[in-house]
Structures are given as C-alpha cells and as structure tokens.
Image (cartoon, rainbow over all chains, first blue to last red; front, side):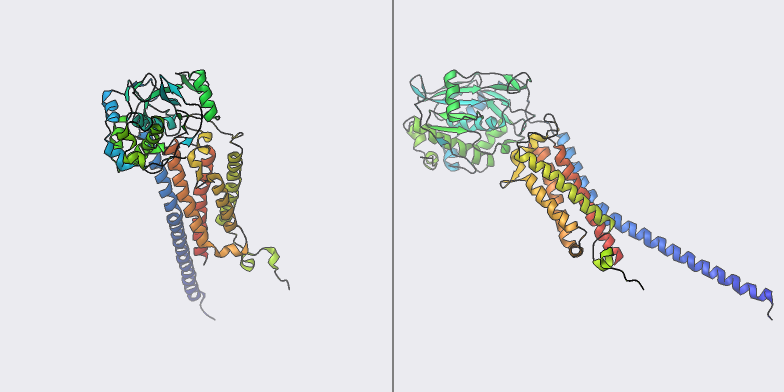
Length: 304
Length: 158
C-alpha cells in the first residue's frame, strides 16, 4: 500500500500540466482567432476602405469647385476684346481644322427663302439657361463673323442646375449683326435666372415673332433648342458637338482654345463653325469667295 | 442505422455554397436586381412615376435622362439589371457556384469600377445625385465586401 502523501504530489503536477496545456491551447486558439480577424479586416476592409476614400475624394473635389463663370445673373457685355477675338480668327485656323472631329451636319430643308432687308436671313432661337445653346453660340458667332460683324454680344453662362452646368458662353440678346451679305436674328427666350412662374422655369427674355415661331414649328416640331435656320436651306436642331468639352472654362479660355487648331475645343467648335459656314455659303451664292472657296469650306460635306 | 440524405442540404454533401457572407452576397444581388429593374422600368416609361426629387442637388430625373444614362446606346439601368442578374447566379446557393470564386471577384471588381465612374459622372458631368442610383452604388459596395468576406471565409475553412 502506498503512502497517500506520496500519491498526491504527482496527481497535483498532472492537473497543473493539463491546465497549462489547456491554457496554451486557449492562447493558441485566441491567437488564431485574432489572426483570422486581422486577415478578414485586411482582405475585406482594405479594398472597401479604398473605394470609400476615392468616393470621399470625389465629394471633396466637387465641394471645393466653384463655377468658372457667374450664373443666375443677367448677361454682361462680352466686350470688344472677345468680339474682336471671334472676328479675327485666322482663315488658316479654319482651314487647318476643316471638318474637325465629332461634329454633326445640319439637315437640308426646302422651304420658302427666309430673308430680311433683301438679304438671306439666319434665325437662331435659344435661351441663356440652355447648355446646348451655350455650346452652339460659339460656332454660330465664329461662322457669322466671317460674313459680318457682331457688336454688343453678351457674356453669360448656362444654368448651374442643368446639365453641363454654368457653361461659359455668349448671348445674342441685344446684340447687333451687320453684314452686306446676310441678316441675322438672335432670339434668347430666357435668361439663366430661375423663375418658377415662367413656362421655361427661367425669366423670360425675347419673344420670337409669330412668323419665326411658325418657322421653328415647321422645322423643329418638338420645340427643342437651340434651333439655327440657315435661310430655310439648312437647319440645326440641338447641339452640333459635345458641349461638355467647354466645362470649367471662361469665355476668354474658350476663345483662346478655339485659336489652337489641335485643341479639342477648336476641333469641335471650329469644325462646327466650318459646317455652318458651308451652309451660309449656300445662302450667299458662295460670297465672299475668300471664305466660300477656302479649304475649310471645300473640305466640309453638307447633306444634299 | 440512419443515412443522411443529400436532400437534407448538408453543404459538404451537396456542395452548396451556404456560408453567411455567401448568403448575404446572394441577397444583395437580389436587392440589386429589384432596384435596377425599377430603374429600367422608369427608363422605358420616361421616368413618369420615378419616386424621387426632381430639383436641386438630388435630382433623379436629371440623372436618369442625361446623355450619360446610356453607354453605347444601352441604358445604364439595363446594364445594371443584367449585372445583378449575373451576380445573383454567381452568388446563388447552388452546387455549381462553389467553384466560381474567380468570376465572383471579377464581377464585384467590375461593378465597383463602374460605380466609381457613375459617381464621377453624377458629380462632375450631370451635377446631380440620383438616390435610386446611390442605392445601387451602396448595394454594389456591400456586395464587394460580402464577396471578399465569403472568399476569406472559404480560404480559412480549407
């Protein structure tokens, strides 16, 4: 028979060894669990966090941006510098750009000749709030400036709450166009100042004559703007190019970009102006020859 | 002696993908299908019944009728619907989806990149936020998390 006292000591040691092993297993299990959690956080949390940070970055950049030009205000005078810049775009610039890139052609129509003061007439109907009109005016002004001279052009921007917000542009409201070959009517239906009582949602500005309304209705039954009618020979309803390329630029910057033949702005705005110039030449009997026989106009193919 | 039938749904015997994150991914895909189906319906009905503000910074109509609401002539809403249908199949608790981990990862990566592009367009091109689109963006982001979680769980179990 063994001594009970001698039996107890090994039993105690055994128990503590078991407890130690259990403790070690527990520590190991905890470590494995922590490692799993860390890996999970890394593989799931990190990519999601990166995406969230990119989105937050977008929002911060957006919040810190201010419109390049004032909007929601009456058009200011464009000034003679801008008018002169449009008037004096070198013929070589038009020739180099030619038909440009991404430019839509006007639609050929066959109505009774649109005239005023014994001259073929160009009718533009748009609105200052309208972003597509904002883009189209640059090409219209550049093309018409090859046949005559604008004065009192306005400087404004499309609505800040519309697509292509606050696109810097000109305004034909109150502007005068003088040309020995062409007559021009520029109708700006509204300002860019919101007005909930107006049918367009913006303060009303110019009212087209009944005859011009009828013309617009004939060639553009949907009533979309802008509408440019080249003497009832060609019509453009909508934008001729991607207006988004003008985003964030001021009038001065756009005019400067128009002079750089390899810029996207020149390729589209001057390209559209060349297309319009070709349409204008069909109205003037290809006068002046320096314009209508130029490489720029010859390179453009109008629908027949 | 009893035998376990495959019809009892034992994941090991049926090969069905039934982890919790896997099920969450499937439910998120179904939710994505429902929201994008609604946006597709609105797209083809001129957004006549679109339940969302139409003025100010939150303007669903402005977003869903903008030129960017279509890519190469295909409405973004339709693309979204097709995307979530595919993701729902890839994440479905079906035997064959257990081995489609790589496709699921490619799917959520593509969806996440698309979401970033669409948020960029909303903020910098259209200048308006569409709440329904934001719901889709959120679902896609959660789907990314669920698929990654599911993958990590599978790797740990192996």
